[in-house]
Image 1 (cartoon, rainbow, N blue to C red):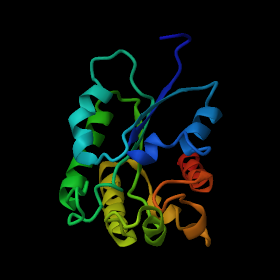
Image 2 (cartoon, rainbow, N blue to C red; image 1 turned 30 degrees about the vertical axis):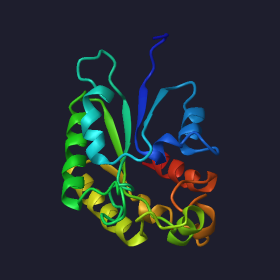
Image 3 (cartoon, helix red, strand yellow; image 1 turned 60 degrees about the vertical axis):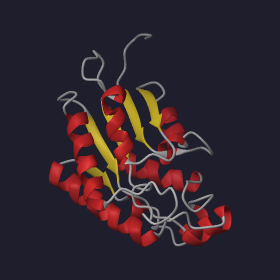
Image 4 (cartoon, helix red, strand yellow; image 1 turned 135 degrees about the vertical axis):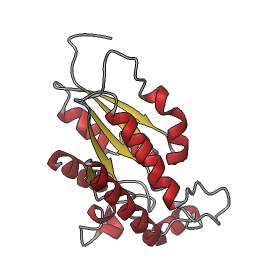
Length: 202
């Protein structure tokens, strides 16, 4: 640790979080904006789903540490919503996804009375671009993303947690299909700029 101590922000999720420092990503932008006000820790794991997140929850957010996060930005859902029939799919059934996210939220909120939480729902995808980039759609469809997004938003409302409708946010631009992704799933600078604006507003 180095002093003086400052608020700690933690970004926790899958590849949308892990890659958030690439291509002028949203994690890098937040770090720049808060460079003199807060320390930001990245805990992103590409390919992971909410089931995997549960397994490391106590390691990422131990309850017995002196320093507690001031803010956690939580994102899982893109991998969970993949088609279960796709080979080696990271799919997690919708009901389990919701319960996993409920457990994660409860754990984070139990860390400290002052820890704040923002959830990102499951995102939109550009199916055609995924096929062009990877040779198949990897089991990803925009419709499945919508279903998981709506379930995450409903859960956040139930638990009194701020939720960003990631699925709808990415589609607000008329040209979103050609601007917000570099591979149909992961964010360009333009896609990350949308996320930053939503986070700052929230």
